[in-house]
Image 1: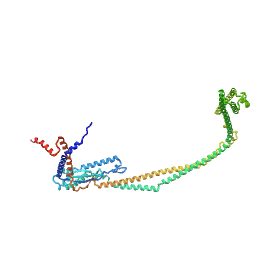
Image 2 (image 1 turned 90 degrees about the vertical axis):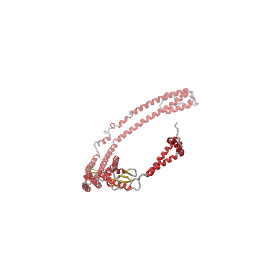
Image 3 (image 1 turned 135 degrees about the vertical axis):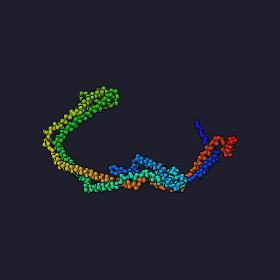
Image 4 (image 1 turned 180 degrees about the horizontal axis):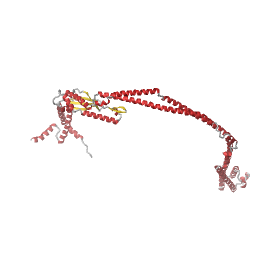
Length: 557
């Protein structure tokens, strides 16, 4: 388990030795103040030199095109490369501030105000420093500061200004490029020629628009002809459709008055025979269902009689059942079954179950046979209907059975064999419309071809005019750039901000040095307090002095 550090021990040590810590801070701080006050004041003067211009590159391609540094900003990669190049260029210029040739030139220029020691170029270079001026936002500007530190503020300002002037001459002598514009000395004549070519192209363009630009007119004519062609096509379709509809109507009426009448007569016979077959099938099916219901009742009564279950009026039940059987089933052979409808007294007296069971058995056998016969008959009818054997009369509706040649309608149809009716009139109506449509389509194709030719010529003239204008504006811009570049006489930097004699020294910094001395003394006092406490010395000044003198006495002896 880790031991906790008790800070109270260290705080007690610092509180016991507070006078030692304060004494050390005061002694060291006072010493720093006295030393700084004894130093000679130093003044700082600053002169500014500005980088005047960026490089301008002029390239000749298909015409004249100017590429400036703003064009590079369109690409992030090019912008980063441009910024890096400018930064390296400014760093190079800043490094050229401390130059021996500049120092010799300044020493010769200021020989009257400099003493023998300061007039040495090596000594002057110690006073000078070059740096880039920082902007408020934190970035570097294009201004190079020439900072001169000297005990005399007037001499510091004079050195800074002389150094800035010599630096301007020195850099411009190295980077000057006045002769680089000599290949473009005839740029003015090229501007005049380009302006003449543009005026000529503009005149041809205006003449074409005034006399030959018929594109809009031809397009309107094409639109009108296409609208007429569309209407002619629509009218041709309508006329042919009208003739065809009339022909179909005539033939429909002829068919309705001949063949359809005979087919309708035969169809009525077919419908009657079909209804008769359906009626017979429905009748047999209903009778079979009724017999099945009676068989269920008969079997139920027989079971009750054999079981000896009697309700006291079995004779009335038996009589009612027989009445339903004889009323429903009229084709059973009851005359061979020895079953008769006796008088009510006889039936009521015939309560013998054996007799009733015998009668029921006879009825059940007869109804079962009838049901079986009906099932066979219905199955036969269903198979015949499914196989269309019962529809042999449909043959009367076929073309062969109708015998159209012998029928009255056949003679009427024979009269129209090869008759086209009204259809020839469709060709008569179509011929002039077709000819007019072909004529208009040929004219439309010719107009469109003429429009294409005129449009191509118009585009060519407009492009020539635009190219001449671009060439003229680019050359004019280059002429202005060259004029501006030539006016700078090849200057790359310019002495822009003269230095003035400073009013306040920049060093030595008494307060800063004193504060540093106090901090160092305070830290030394803390270290001494912990050291004395570790050695076991007393914290009171008198006791500490006594212990120190006692320990040193034998050594001195």
